[in-house]
Image 1 (cartoon, one colour):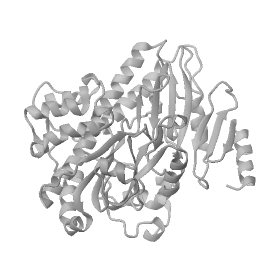
Image 2 (cartoon, rainbow, N blue to C red):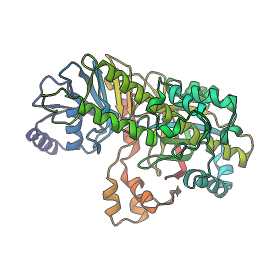
Image 3 (cartoon, rainbow, N blue to C red):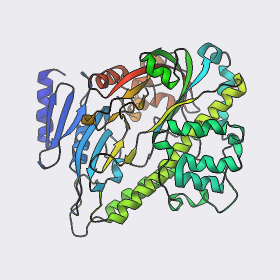
Image 4 (spheres, rainbow, N blue to C red):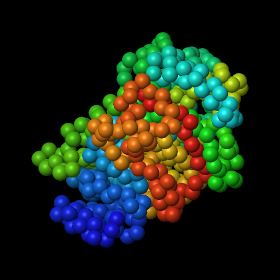
Length: 477
């Protein structure tokens, strides 16, 4: 951005009540009306648009506090920063002391990424591409999948995540898991963030999913979902950090597959319920915050804080299981077509979640943990590369990295445009979907370029690149 344009932007935002400054790639924003709020930092690649609405949302989030006690300590936004429909900018990360903020996570609880690599080359995979697509289309789009779980397995899932689910499945496998290598699934739990297990409670699960006995047929489990969620088959195009890649089982030329999904209807219910609850229990007689972001105070409402964290954990456990089953269906079809393909898990990590870190909690909305040495998975669009990185544990960024490149155009704008495939970046893109509008809404032209996002975070000491993957085909529900 040219200096004159930058000066005009800063003046315009000041008229809207924002103090905005820039120091190289780091932008700082604060509400002029609240000098006690911490400044929020945004890491942006040079030349990326600075969106006033997103800056306002981030400044509002940084200023959240509770009259009964509790405040935001630090606020940060990753380079895929853009406005969120719920009033929270995508890419926002906040560290809080003495309070939790349900809206800072929202209703797509434990949306996240899961990455596998397979002992299979791209050419061999593509030789049976049509048969593979037909199998997965049935499971992902036409409900031919069989993920029926016993009532005990569902209860174990909601209470303890992947270990709770797998322990019950081992007693009596049902559905597709009867064909799975359960020993491998147990071993892979160690490659899931926090072991894929938080302390949940079945009271926050939909009643029809936790009966006393029988087999549960859950229409939401092992589904991709809408928006930017996907399942993508890729090829490892380049390994940059060979030592780390070797340790993680990643080799050039391998087929990889990536799952981006979350807790679906369970998260929507839990997130929406607690957003409304936080508003309803705001201290009587006190004016509502202008931002309409309502926190829960540990000092003032300790039981509610604890209950919210349990409810969020319950939905998060479902999200871990949803991604595991989406990936397991794909792995089972690979084995049916190509023989005993091992296809081990590299890592599974969450994007939207509240976790105990720092002064109290860190809530991430469209950002992923990037603790030192931990795998970080950052996808591009379905026409661009995705990246596997190693986190560097940077405290300035609250040990957080972006969860993608970020949208450049809204779905509404993409749907209204008079686009051809070349303009949308869809030439050569193999998108498997039943809805043409999904292909258009999620076209590469809807997203910012992934390269500058990755380079910016490398230079800032957020994470180092381990490998780059190129898409072969993408499933969009």
